[in-house]
Image (cartoon, rainbow, N blue to C red; front, side, top):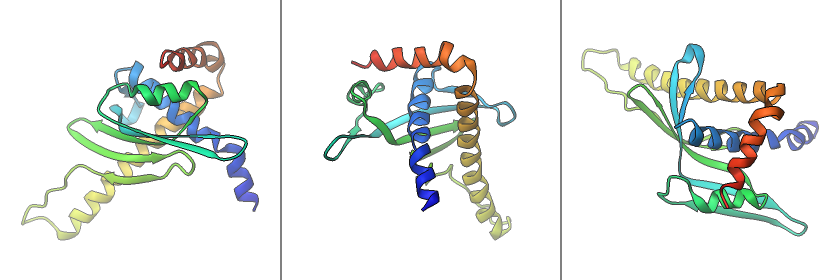
Amino acid sequence: MVLLERLRQSEFLGRDFLVWLWFKSETNGGEFDLGELGRIELRFGRKIKLQAEGDRATETITCAGHAPHMKEARFALTVDKKVTEAEITLTIGKDLWSFVLDAKWMNFKSLKTPKVVQDKNDDPDGLFYEKIFLVEKAISVVDALYFSYVKLRLSPQWGNEERPQLIRWIREGR
């Protein structure tokens, strides 16, 4: 029970992280510099799930489409809906991952890694280990992004610069 209470107290962090990630992916052209992990490109995909809790029930909307700015989803942010899931594409060099990131547990859903090709002369176990390496790489990138977000959120820069820019970006979604 204690774990569930802690989750309820801190679950806003995952939702706020996804909003910040969406904001940064649109305002930075999708590019992030993650130090040792290098430069990556992260874009929100064609599906975003948002939720609002009211007095009587939870209201959930799912926005899907090809529009680069997802106008309906951006508008939903202006009326206090929170991002609960987002389809994300991650590019590192020539490699491409796609997945859905869940805000509550920070789970990866439908993770697709770059294709792994096995040569006839390669070790058959190598295919498995290469796939695991690619899964871990995506997890490491999201961990690094989350670390950057929390570090920024705890710094004075959050209140002075980042939060006002984020709020302005949300308001522009109307």
